[in-house]
Structure formats: C-alpha cells, structure tokens
Amino acid sequence: MKKILLPFLLAPMISFAQKKEVLKYFISEDSLVGVKNQDGKIIIPAQFRIFSDMGNRERIDDETIYFDGFKKDEIKEKNAWGYVYDRKGNFLYRPFFYDNGADYFSEGVRRFVKNGKVGFADRNGTIAIEAKHDFASSFNYGYAAFCDGCDWEKTEDEHKAIVGGTWGVMNFKGEIVQPVAKSENTVEIDGKYYPYPFRYNEKEKNILQFFEKYNKKLSEINYVNHYNKIAENEKKLFFEIVERPKGNFPFYQVYAYDYGKMEAGLSGYKFLVSEDGKDVFALEYDNEKIPFEKWLKKQIKEAEKYQKEHPDNPNKLR
Image 1 (cartoon, rainbow, N blue to C red):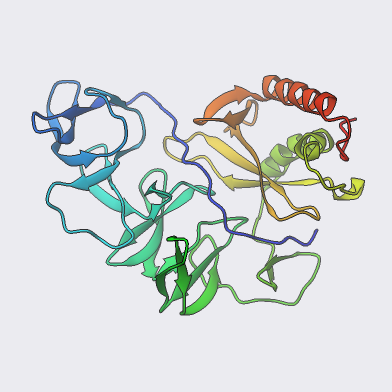
Image 2 (image 1 turned 60 degrees about the vertical axis):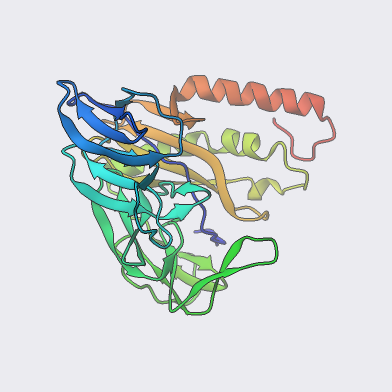
C-alpha cells in the first residue's frame, strides 16, 4: 500500500430522512425553541436560544434533534455548543464547538463534550467513544489524534491553538494505537507509522472495485486544476468505506482520499452506496444526493471547461 501523510480534517454533517413520527420545531412567544409532534404534543419544551435560521414548524427528519444554540440562563460549558436529543425527547450529548458551531461528522462520527472531556458520537446519537480526553481531532483515514493535559491558548491572530499535554493516536474503537515499523501497509501520522486501519468483507471489496474502475478518470478530474505538475503514477485516489449501514442510514459511505506528492487531504469526493450495492450517489453542497453517472458527466464537463480556459494547466484531462 502507498505511504500516506495523514492530517485530521473535518467533513460536513450528513442527514437522511426516512418515514418516522412527524416532529417539528416550534417557537414560543419569548422566542425560545422547542419541539412538538404532529398532534401538538410537546416533546421538548421551548428553552433554547437558537443562532441558525429556523422557521416555526420546521420539520425534523434526522434521527436526532439538534438545537443550534444554548439554553436560557445556562452556565457556559467549555468547548461545547448546542444540544442533541433523541426523537423521544431524551438528552443525548452536547457537540464539540468547532468553526462557530457544532462539530461536523467525519467518517461517521463527531466529537462531543462531557465534563470538559471529548468523545465521539455517531449519527444515531449513540456514543461511539466515551469522553475521556482533553482534546481529540476529528477522525481521518481511520485515526484521530488526542491529548491529555493540554489546553487552548490564544494566538496572535486571535485564534486558539492546543498547547502542552501528552499526545497519542486512537482507532475507531477508541483504543490507543502505538507506532509500528514502516512498511507497505502503514500510514504516516506526524512522522510515525501506524497499521492500515480498514478491513473489508467480499461485498465491501466489490463496492470499492466500482470506484477503482473510475479511479483514473476521477484522479484526472481531481488534479486538472492543480498548478504543480504531478507525475502520472502519482495521480491516484484512495477509496475507503468510512461508514456502514445502520439504523436510519441505509448506505455505505465512501471517501476518496488524495495522497499524491501534494499536501495530503480529502479530495472532496464523497459517495453513498445503497445497502444492496446497486445504487451509487455523489454528495454535493448540503449533502444533496446525485446519481453517480449524472455527477460524473457534470464533473467531466466542468474539468473540460477549466482546461479550455486554462490551456497552460500542467495536469491534463485526457
């Protein structure tokens, strides 16, 4: 397997609607937000001050209920933003504060805060990794960095950075993973090597083969607008299944990772494959599902347009 330089990036939250009890937000006379069902029964009392655009009687289709704000007269909790409840009105967790709002889902989980510690929850609201570290990065390529004894420090540009503490790396199970000797089956994180984290059954291997068939074309599209010349053998994306069907999420989610000679990171390509493996969608914008063939034609057209407008681009679409 190719050596991979691994940053820890975020990915947007994904939600999918299925038939379930109709729930809607409602706004009280004093501009607080709660939730009612279709019969007008209050599921969650109006007690939240909301910062996002939310209309009265806006429908809730997610498996969990999210309030993008804080409770009236609450005591501020460090690194926490918003509240997440289940559809029965039971409190689940408070998301980790990131980028002026709640943390995004990355590889099927997102960070939450409890008693000042950071853990991970999945899209159904289930706690995947208990909150036990002072900080943790989001998951990327099967691993997340974490630290204990560290804290935030304000920098000169008014942003905050994590300083001090003891750092480590955890896997999807929350287990601490120790570095290993470099080999063809390791990934590189901050100059150290860790075991390749993914395992697949035959069905999942077949799903990934679908994307391998399009690897050359998708790689050309991905690199066509890069200014630095990239060798042909470096124009290769890596496809991994980062989430499997569960509960209200009847899909395999596939990320395409970009690891050439350029700075490592997500290529931006994210896909869904139906549980039976027959339907493939690309995700765009606000998690809009677009049939793969339709999406690919659009990507090719846009890449051809870019190449025509920039004839000196070093990485040609063939």
